[in-house]
Structures are given as C-alpha cells and as structure tokens.
Image (cartoon, rainbow, N blue to C red; front, side, top):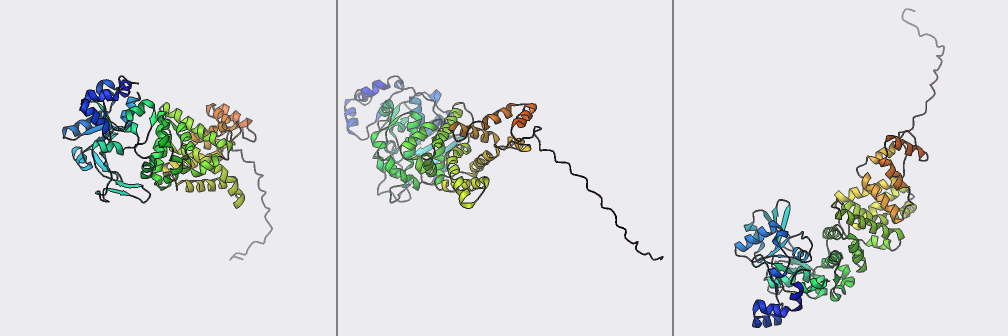
Length: 476
C-alpha cells in the first residue's frame, strides 16, 4: 500500500529498537499504550496533499510552544491512497489559548469545546487533547448520565490519553510536522493494513458514552470497505435503541454523512444489517418489509445519489428524505382515505403530514428540505393529469425536474406501470408541434395544448316590451 509500511508491521519490535534503542523498545512493549512511530521515509503522507490552512495552524501552534498533530480521517485516508478532505488538529493548547492565537477562530460546543479556525470557506477544527475521566474532575468538566451517556467531556490530558479517548484505532493516527512521522498509540497502523474497524476500549462502554459511535462504525465500514471487528460489532444490535437518546438535530447531521458521502447504498445495507436503520427511520423500516417495491425504490434512489456525487453533481436532502419516507406515505394514504372518507389527494396530504410528524421525533428535517419534499410528493398527483394548460403549469413548476426524476424512480422500482415517465420525457424533448401532437394522442387531451375553447352561448332573447300606460306628466 505504501513503502515500508508492511515491513514495519511485520517487525515492529525491530523498528522500535531502531527508534528508541533496545531498552526503550522493551519498555515500550511493556507500557500501555505502546507508541509506534512510522518515519517519513516509510509512509506516503505528503505535505503537498495536505491543506495549506491546516499546516498553517500546526506551524503556528508549534511556534507558540504547543504540541500539535494532524489526526483522524485525513491521515487515515492519505495512508489508504485516497484524497483527504477534512483536516482536524489535536493540540495540548486549551480552547482559550487557541482562540488567542487565531483571530479568525471561534469556540463552539458545550458538550465538547472545540475551536473552528476559518480560512475563507475552509474550516480547520482544533481540539484539545482529551484526558481520562476520574473523580478528581468536577461536573463542570465532565458529566455522564445514569446510562453512561457523556453529557460533557472537557477533561484535558496528554496526547497518549487523547489517543485512547478516540473512537476507532484507524482514526487515532497522529502526524507531526516537527518530524513528519506518524505516531500510533492504539494499533491503528496494523488495523489499517488488515482493513479492520476496531473500537478503542470496551465497546459496550464506548457505545454507551456516545451511541452515535454505532452509526460511525456503519459509515466507516461502508466508506472504507472495512470489516467491523467481532468485539466492536457484537453489542451493536442490542445497544441500537440507545440512539433514541440522541437529539434529532444531531441524528439529521449523521444521516447526511451516511447518505451524502458517496457510499449511500452500502451504508443503508450496513445500517439494516445491524438494526440501526430502524432507530433512524422506524416507519420506513416497517414498510420496507411489507412492500416489495419499497426496498427497490430506496436502493435505487441511493444508487442515483452515489452516481451524482461521483460526477460532482448537486444532491439535495429533500429528494433523499422523500425517497426514504415515500413508502410510508403510500401505505398510510388508502387507510386514511377509508377511515376519513377523503378523496385521494387530501388523503395523501394528510398521510404526508402524519409521516413527517412521526419522523421528526427521530431525525429533524429543516423546512428548507421538508417543504420541497412535500412539493415533490404533491406533484406525483399532478403528473398523470395531461390535459390543457395543466401540463404546462406542471412543467413550469420549480420542483418539476425533481418530481419527474422521482416518477422515473417509482416506475423503475415497480411501484407504477411504466409509461407515464416516458411520456413526460418525450414531452420535454419535443418542440411545440411535437408537444401538441403528444397532447392530441393522449386520451381526452386538447390538441392545441391549451384550455378547451368555451362553447358558444346562444344569444339571449330580448324580452318584448309590455304595453304599459304612459305615466302622467305635470302638463296633463
């Protein structure tokens, strides 16, 4: 994968002797955690592929006398030969000290205090080394619920302590610009070579501290095509309900990471295999097992999303959530129509409102996405109506293109009989005369493509004046 890496992992003891000497190597083997150092000439992480802004943060922190490392996904992805995107810095400087060094920064978060250093549109996230929790820390720094959920975690420590406080071993690799080496305290280099995703520490305890780690395990397994270590995987299904403790706003952000990172289909399958999807979309999970076309519709939507991201084309959560929740709307609609004696259109609107209300208890959906999603759903009732001016009004609707794609998706999944989608495809591609012809060929449509001419009304007959006596005048 990269030069010297396999050789280092095969003989870690010999390499440690080279770096620390025989006595230090023996002490390192007995110590916990044991540091491993991969020197510059044995890895492929190059400053040319790293963010200039992140390097500026590292150099300034080092210049001010602080320790600072690049850590997390940027190092993991670089070692795997992928292009790194997000750059996180870990340092022994406190958030207030980082804030003093960078005027273009601000401290965010209460549960975890971190610093965002902004360079134009790029944001470098700087965190202070986390320490172990202990009785000596007051509730102002660390706090846990009775179930073990971390409510606050602002305990500072050393880089070694920070490493074992991170979630997965492959995310606990530290790159320093002082020696250009990679420092590993948790065995992440070996797991990276074996393509294994392993949680640091006791899995059950770590999942209880932050249940979102289960979603992160699913996301990284899908994204990296790694297998989840047996111990890391074992408690997930049993502890999945802990996700119900997480605020819906945070779970909305996690859903976007799962499904808008280019690996949506595999993420969906991993989530379902481990009982996690039901915690995010409970009603959708129920319907997927009952409607044969529902799984095909959701998976095809995710396939299309992955393809658009690969082509660097825009995607919107409105379409994604629309596909994930549409089977629920379709299942509720006939029941509501029957129970409330409603026509199909108002029944579907009532069903949509009920589905969204239930979903908001699990993941928030901002109005900037829920409103377009509702419009896409509503247009599914308009697309079959192909007569007169209504066709052109539908075509000019701001959500028409998304609704049209959604229609094709429904046909491809087998929910609808194919035909309507191809008609709209031809209609969009046709010139004015072709559009008139399509409307003429459609049963009951007006060939002119306009509203039918009003029937001529018969002229009203004038009423004959009656012979009434002339009223008398003053002269009479």
